Length: 383
Image (cartoon, rainbow, N blue to C red; front, side):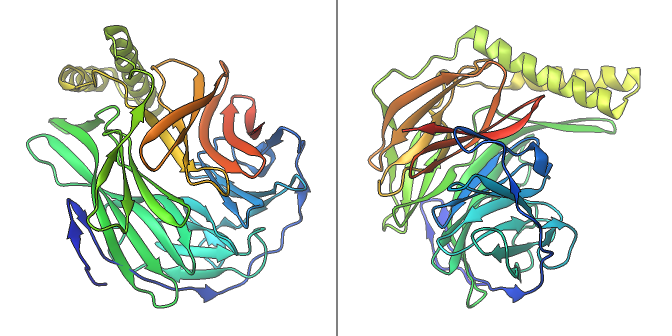
């Protein structure tokens, strides 16, 4: 491993390769519909938070600690890919799926390796072990192809400072042929407040303070700062941030919105304590810690603009963005984001009973990953 440079709080290092293996052949199964919606529940995926398109035709998808499925967008046929395990073509944790022009694949943080397959998910897998230490105290947040190499964004835990932990996002470039790894940039990531009382220890992430999103579009790698409403084009020298601007005023974060955020945090911790079957005395002590953290928690005066970002439609240079909405809102607003920082909204939809977990543009529309208690699917909005 070798360090190349550090630019304005951004650092450089990177490269790797692949080994042949065998994959169990799995029969293709038709999806329920190829018009506007494709169910993925039949593949054992109940919450889809990752979408990628390989060869412009095959939609790769996965969910947190779940499996992988590939859908042919031309025919509507879908199939599961890989299986749990540690052998070739298997995974312990699907950290990120990615799509390339001639391949698709996934990063597995637990096995610390990358696997490539044919764009349709079939064939003999090629696997490469990541260099030791790359994923130490870290997790993969995104992965994008560049020729025979792979960009990977890794969020790494920081060291606590006076009750606060500030994580970082390392942007790495893995060279498949040489096995080298270049650290191209390092950005500030999430911020957490830490608190302990006796044997109890917990942390609370500051809402809306998140690591940038890494997106590859038009041959360039772009880092979109969600907390800072800015973007950077990597590879340019010197590296300069561009402010994201919006024709509409940024939504103000009123006291009522702050109350919704605090209530949702309390409900989440209560559900965790119930799932872990905490004793009454332990619950009281834990609630005291959470109350202290909530009193210290800072919320923004204005809502940051970008919630998700992905490549825009093929042949265009802009990004596809899902905007942040007020806490408790079930509205999803889609916008285009130019590389000069201009955000332009083109669609808003309200789904009271659905969660939107990921978005990806294809040649004929926008695909949104959605789920509720009744199942999970990808929905196409034609443009």
